[in-house]
Each structure stands twice: as structure tokens, then as C-alpha cells.
Length: 405
Image 1 (tube, rainbow, N blue to C red):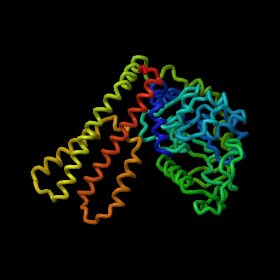
Image 2: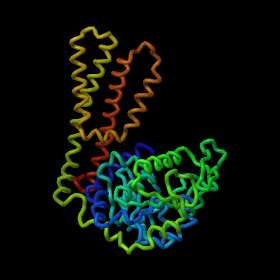
Image 3: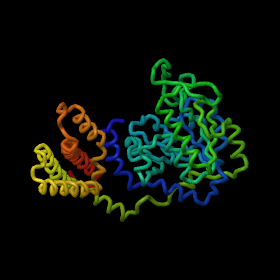
Image 4: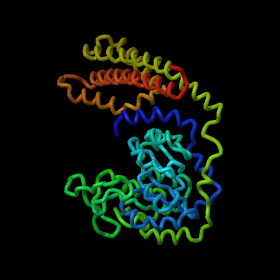
């Protein structure tokens, strides 16, 4: 995913985040249900979804139905009302959410999710409060993690092909005129499917499969049923049809209006807290200016270290003081919460440093000299990032009516 897109989404979504709900509130809202006796169904957009989507309606209000974004069109067309939807992809196609029914479904998002979708969504929007361990999760992992987090004892997977049966990529309703894969492409390889045959997949899909297997292994208390009826075999799951899975887990359950149940009575932050956050947002510009000064000081520290390393540390006591000063400043930067803004461009920073190190033709440079040069470049890149973020942040403060033009 393009770094600029991720950065743009996070910066813009921060102005929605504090007015919305937290995923923790989902758990709080469903605490009163005996989760162990009820199932959650996770619906993805694999091509096998077209085989059994008509069965899903029988599970309405009997199981908690959570649908990933690309599968929403198929599910809605089948007359099913999802209890929750998932969207975390920074570049997810907004056309998937143009349907008015879809716009009103409760939605779990990432702070990096496409802001164009989040800003127009009419239903409840739930953000994770511990973004560090969730935002990098891919969509299929994310949905699986949420229902596990909410405490359901049984998880039923459908549309989770994790492969391309018959060369198809998604359920037919997902995208118009979508072409299948070209199996001759070297990036595709075969794995075992649920029928004991072979099916084409690729490395990212296979990594999802392995992640499922790992989670199933470390969470033996959760029963996982693969009712996809196609695709790659996920070891540790019980394989059955969706009809069988619904009959087994749903038929004797009373109806529950999950949509009403998970509707929070208040947002993540109350009005007073929201006002405090908005003041904090206004102060960010001046705090970034202070951070820039610290980074410039650290850049000078690294420049001086580089020079002393090249001179072979002629003044040992001065060198030691400089190392201590650099370490102290590095810790100060590490503890500054606004460094998270600059981490949006982390890959840009790493690429610049590594590219320079790899292209360096001077084989006489020691590791210490390289470290000093690298530290200097990191500071220079972060200083540039601050300038970029400040301009964008000022624009967003105006757009969100926190300051005047």
C-alpha cells in the first residue's frame, strides 16, 4: 500500500475517531450473551461464497454475522442483514459501500482505512483503541480476531477460499467483469484443497491460511468450522457444508437482534473529552515545531559523531559526551508521542537509509561511521516529514472547523 495513502487516511480519520465508538464497546455490549453456546459466522468474498450464500439467511439472528467489505454486495443481494461489517484496507474501493443498506451497517474500521468510506458511513463506526496490534492485520484476520475477542465459542468460516478455485478471485457480485487469474504466472502455486485435490493460491493468501492454523492451534477453546465449500484446506477446522453448520449450531437458538444489542448508548469519548481532544489537535502544530527543533539538534549530534568517527575519535572524553548526548536525545524522541505521525512515513525513512548504505562505494567506512550517517539521514527525513504533516494538519484543522483560515 502506498505510504502517502496510509498517511492521508490516518490523519483524516483522526478527526472521526474520537467521535465514534471503540471495538471494546462491542464486547461490553454482548457480555450478557452466553457466547459459548452461540456461533459467529465470518463471511469473506471468496468465489465459493456463490455456492452457499442462499443458506446464510437461515442463520439470521441465530448467529452473529460479520461480513468483510468485498462480500457485502453478495450478502445483501441474498437478503441477509449483516450484524457487523469490516473495512480496514487503505485503498478499498468506495463503490462497495454505495448501497444505502450497506452504508447503515455497523462497521469496524482501522485508523488506516479508506477515509472516503468512513466519512460517509451512516451506521455505527467502531475503531480499535489498540491500533498497534490490529491495524496491520489483513481483512480476513481482522474479522476472525474480532469474533474471537467478543467471546464466541464457535466460528464458522464461509467465502474463505484463501485460493482461486477455477481461477476465480472473488464472489461474482464483488466487482463487475473481474478477470480470473493466469495460472501460468509464476506467483501462483498449488496447495491442497478441502476435497483432497489441488487449488491455486499465492503467497499472501497462503500466509493467511497459515495464520488461521496458528490461531486455531493456540485457541483450542474455539471451535472453527470451515463451511466455505471450496478453496484451500485450513488444518484444524471441521469441514462441512454451510447447511450442516447452521443445522448444527443455529437451529435450537432463540432469535437475538444483534444489531440493536451492539448499538452503544454513547461514543468512545464524552463531550468534555472531545473538546479536550480538539484542543490537543489545535496544539499539535506548535508541538511539531518543537519536535522539529529536537530532530535538528539530533542531526547535528550525528554529523559531529560522523566527523569524529572519521577522525578516529581523537578526543575520547568529548566523543563519550557526544555519544551520551545523542543517546539521551534519541530516548527523548522515542518517548515523544508525535513521532507516531512521522512513523506514517517509516518505510520512506528505512528505504532512504538502506538505499544509501547499500550504494555506498567507500568500503573503508566502519559500522560506527555508517550508523552515524544513517542516524543523520533518519533525522533529515523526519524533519521533511514534519513539514509535510504540518501543512496537511493545518488544512485538516480548517476543514474540520477547529481553526479559521
